[in-house]
Image (cartoon, rainbow over all chains, first blue to last red; front, side, top):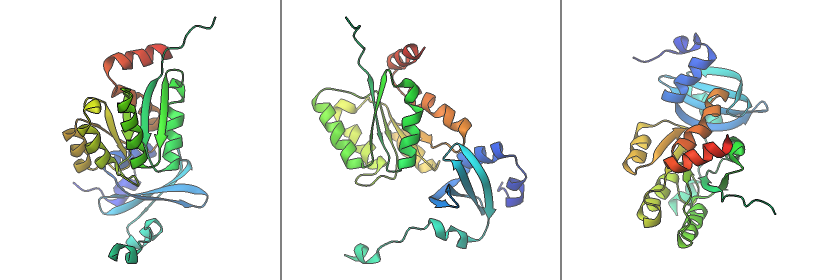
Length: 84
Length: 148
């Protein structure tokens, strides 16, 4: 059964991370607001982790459903090189 | 006269993410007395190093491979490593951020372990132990005894 954003939001940090660890689909990594961030997709929503210390201490966890928010994680692809 | 030091066990680690490289280096720090971690940011360079080790008849106790690597990705590296007779029984772990069932199956089919990169301090604390767990039993015992 799929988890909703609201159900995930109601969990404490540790079970949130355990769920992401076992079921999350990694999308990317970037730097925002002085933090390293990781983005995952979990079922029908996205989870963004902001690290105070990478992979150790989390500052906050953001949740969203809009795919536009993943733009920060998309790396530009040089189409010209692909065509060569 | 100084007592002679036992040779260190060699761990090869290939990952292009500098933060993850640092993280794993830190996590092996407690074993620094008896484990030498050699890291590479490029799959092809890591493979060249492994081929040189094979020529010297030296075998690492563990090879850790990120999946997304420049030059030669971790899955291609694993396939190549398993074609080299010298490394046919060497423990290899695919170490990656996603826990994709297809990647897990790929690792299993080539007799390799699969570990997801940690997301928290609690998970981080366990990963070195999980890495060591993939080494051969006699080496595992030596590493842990020397630590104790």
